Structures are given as C-alpha cells and as structure tokens.
Length: 408
Image 1: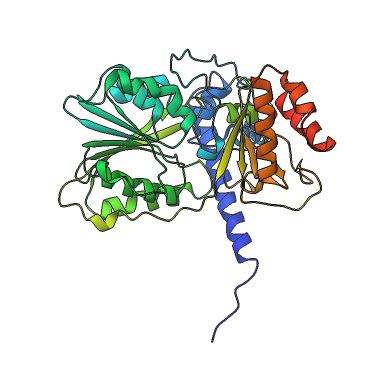
Image 2 (image 1 turned 90 degrees about the vertical axis):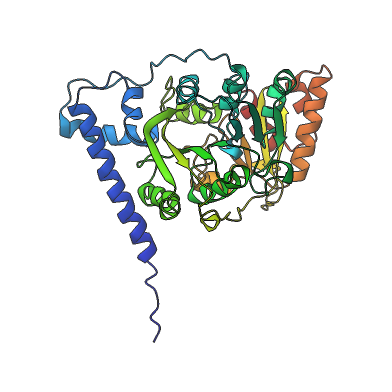
C-alpha cells in the first residue's frame, strides 16, 4: 500500500537543515571571538567557512547581547589589494559565477611544485592562467573559457607565448584535438555538486591519468554544504584517487556584482572574504573511467550587451507576461540580496547585470535589440543617456533602465 507523502515534509526538512546551519555558524563565530577578537569584519567573515557576509552580519547582530562583547568588528575597512591583472578592470559575469582567484592565491598555487615539463590546461580559471603565462610556468598552457569578454582581454597573450585559447562551454564535450593532451588540469566550477561532476568529467578527458587541482567550497557556504562536499569527493575516494586537501588555501577577488550586492546590504569595503579549500587529485592509468560521469546541465542562452562598462545579460528563452518591457515584480529589490543561483529572485530573473541587478523583461529579444541600438548610438558619439531617451521603450521601462545604468 502506498502512503501519501506529508506535504510539509520537505519544508520541515529544509527548516531543520537551516536550523542546524545557523547553530553551526553561531558556534563558529563564538570560536573565532574566543580565540581573540577579529581585527575587522572582513577577518571575521574569512573565518566563517564560506558563510555569505550579510548572513554573518545577521548572526553577529543576534549574538551581540548574548556574548556581551565590548568591541564589535568594524564593517569593511579592508583596502583593495593592487592587482596588475588584465581582468581586474572587467566587470563580473554573474551568469557564469565569475569569481577569480586573488593574486595572493595565484602566487601560492604557483609555488606548490615545480611545473617544468608540465602540459597544463586551465578550465575556467583565467586569472590563474594569466599568472602562469606571465611567468612561463609549464611547458605548454591552454585556456578553456566560455566568456568571450575575458578571452578578448587576454587575446594577445596567446600570440606572445604560443599558448592556446579555446572558446569552450563545459556543457559540451572536450574538442577532439585536446583529449588526453595534458598532464595537469586546474578548474574552479560554480559551487554546486552537478557542476563538479561535469567539470571532473571534462578534466578526465583532458588528462586521463593526470593531476586535477580544483577548488572546493567550505562547509558553511550554505545549509547542506557538508553533504554536498561529500557528494563531490566520494566518487574519487571510491575510485582510489590519491587526494590532498589544502584547507582555506584559496581566496577570491570580489566581483563587481557581489560588491554591489554587499553594498546594498550595508557592507562596504570588504574584500577577499571568500575562501576555498584546494583539492589535489592524482589519477593513474588504473583509475576507473566510470568515476567521471558528466551530468547534463540545465541552461538557456544568455545574450550579453554592454552599455559603457556595465554588462547586461538577457535570458532569451523566458517570456513573462507584462505590458512593460522591463520591470521589477512585486517584492523584488533592484539589486539582488545574494549572488547564489538558489536565491529565489536570482533564479527567476531573466535579466542580470555586472552590478548586481536582477529584474525581468517581457520580451527578451526586443530588449536585446533596444540595448544594442542604444550601445551603437553611444559608440557613434551620442550621449548614452540621450541615446537611451530616444530608444523605442515604454516610459516605465526607460526609467528603470536609466536608474540602473546611471545610478551613483
């Protein structure tokens, strides 16, 4: 006899997971403070094992009375580190979860071993590739990257060094000329288990008996992160892959979209808060190929249009009904509260920007056309605001776009 599922069971399980997570985060904050008051909020967040800064701020606020602290870590106040990367001037790509390793992390990874004689593939790690290429580390290097704006910024490096740059989406199979051609693969996928399965499969095609070096999200990244980490690592352990984990070894520069989201939450000046473990996986000819199975990833074509420095990304397959070309549904904020793909607004928005916005368009193809027309008019010498004002867009939509493009 089949029994109906309790319709509240899933909600109850989610709440229980959230409660466990909150208690673990509270305990981590207490431990950090007991070990000596953090010098800044940035330092506190770095010790919170992946918890998003606004989540840490709420937990901190709830704990203040209980812990009777005499000093509160200052928000922000961490100076932006100087970075000579060609990518540091680019605004981020929220569709691709474009967090890049900090220069300090690139330097630490470069010092892990002698790279002489190594044929190295960089799967979605352009900042690390740039670091290695500038220092001529490895016998050969190949960058596999889907963001064409990033590839354009690094384009002349291929000519200077003889490196290979491949426009590549990890949803696709590795192109035949590159299968089995590498000894080492670096990769840094979006921090969700299904992406890790696919990135591992792609890395295995690039280096079937090689070494993988990849990031792994910390245990407090979100409720359920510990179980998800286990799901990533278990197949490798079962296959007898030799593994080493460097805890909290990597950190990241804060991309423009996340910086805007933090500022909207009242957190300004924070930098390099996000840390990750680095996993070194050493394969052999005996490693079971069945360990590496790509998972079909959902995804729709996002079209990018740039207006000045700001990058717009439009999902051309979603067509919500509304009389306005662009709009904010009831209850939505103009700037997202989180870059997480699991955030309800982020998961539904079909327009994102490099400055943290998430909103809707009722006609994606028309919006792309109007944005391209506005961009072209501005590039031909017209004032950008005047070009937008003359575009064939309804008044409410124009006001929303104007507030996004020209906000302070």
